[in-house]
Image 1 (tube, one colour):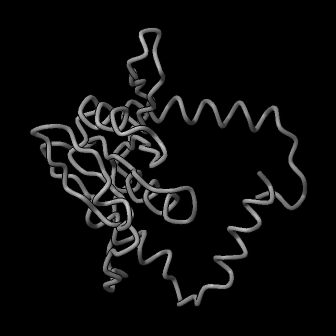
Image 2 (cartoon, one colour):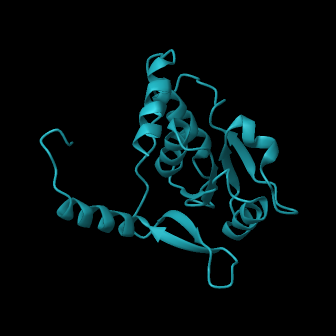
Length: 178
């Protein structure tokens, strides 16, 4: 709701801000998520509450050339476990306070990246190439499916661009919109 967004924005405005802290975390996520050449566009789980860290995690995954699967911390453990196993996520970005509660599938141990504790090392020289092509995955979203078992739907970058292009044509913009 609008009041939750305003409350969240006020919290972030009141935090001590250092130059580019968001950009530093974002670049660190990019640096640590750049996939090996053998898996250039892997799926990365994002187990982060709604807020600034979620934005950092999703943008870091996308800028690193990966696709994300949202793993809402409020989801039941069985659903999360299934989504991690089914998506084949080799990396899960999460917040430190969710690390111990992340339900991992048997025999699967994805690497964890703590988005709120990522080292803020100088990364100004980092230059992540734009590697995404229209046919590469952007994200995987799970639906309940008719059987009750979550089913993953893979969405490519071309689908995302088409959606936003259509929305730009339908939603009027004001002079303040950029």
